[in-house]
Length: 568
Image 1 (spheres, rainbow, N blue to C red):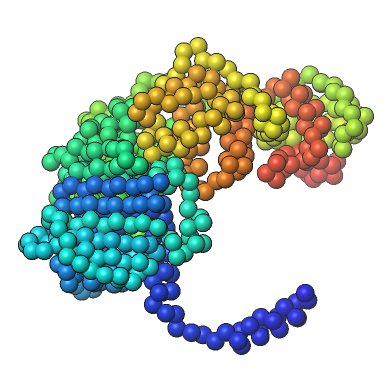
Image 2: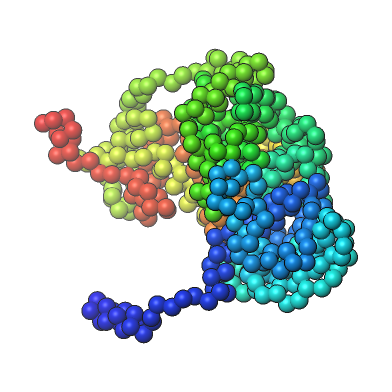
């Protein structure tokens, strides 16, 4: 179709489709998309409502990763029958009365959209009884419409049940992740909520099995919370910490410098009881660790920060995940001052950090002896000898006749390994792996444990020998050569987190795993012998110029370019 015809069709379409006001059902479903993304976001909204209702104990039940069923039971103040009618109306809330309340918000929610949004995309039942007594009430709703309300018996509090989530929004339902990934997302949400409200008792039951029961401590976050929610191994890497200056207070746990991570997954920050993602505070805390942290690594922490409500604006994100601070400079100074107490709290710097080997800034250019290689039927070097003439870091200079090629050895090694592993996988063969002299025990964060358990057979096919033990622990007895014990935690946790964050089909998962394992080979040290093998093998590939992901590996350098570089 020509551009002109396409334009005319669009113009005709525009004429036939006048602007219309959307009906209430469509508006509610669009609004639901801003608040309700998946079962985990339903759980988050319902539990936050229970917390704001003054609950002391909250029980969460889920089935099939929340896709089949969600129930949240609390012992909060409950609702009267009249309030129940308004509960599924948009912008109906008990948490604010005027615009001034937005600037000193103490509750977790305020917009009155959570229940309405959930109701519009599910089959919903609410059973409640108010604290002042009297009869209880039960509401049935489907697709945002009330089916009926009847009297019911229950103790003080509220129970919300959700089934058939996204039954009327098939596009949204289609993009839900696997049961393991959705249950992992729910676990992560509940960990954040339980850590931010340690005074409450949280109980999570998934598919009929109790996943955790928090202690509910009057003294705030305890080691018991860390062990229950994060695992014993993780809990042992934290030390308690507290600081207060006027109305600014910080308490919780700081990770030892030796327990650093390659990302911020081990950071739990709560401001005035609200789980918050703040790159600004993460950077300031890392700055407070000083030279105790290796370059590019991140500290772990579980910190509750209390500050005046007018210091922070929580209204910049639909789900209130991010905040804006009124005076970042003042907050930075306070945080750095409190982190100076780190040494008093025995967050000591391990001795091996003080003796770290610092690499020189300038890398030596290694010129190995000329290595001659025979190649056959190659697109670039047909029947011509190839010489590896120099190594600069992970780059190789390869001579072919009168031509010079520059090869990215890091990407080249990964490409060769990826092609090799894909071939082995296609032929149902397990790649070579190295058995460990002593099996290694790995404590895994519970929210990542289920994902890795589900993929154990596939991991084994890629040379990673591991089996699940009790709790959230794995026993590892074999690894592919490039993955060493000191890197296996980062590798597996990073892999599981990447799988959790994206909906991955089986074939895509295989590609992701192969790519992850193969990329580990990119850290292989290059020398004359390895460089020779790499250059020969690459030039035998069908497409030696690029990786399977499209990254350029090889480039021809002309005499003219060399003259230009030198300035001739």
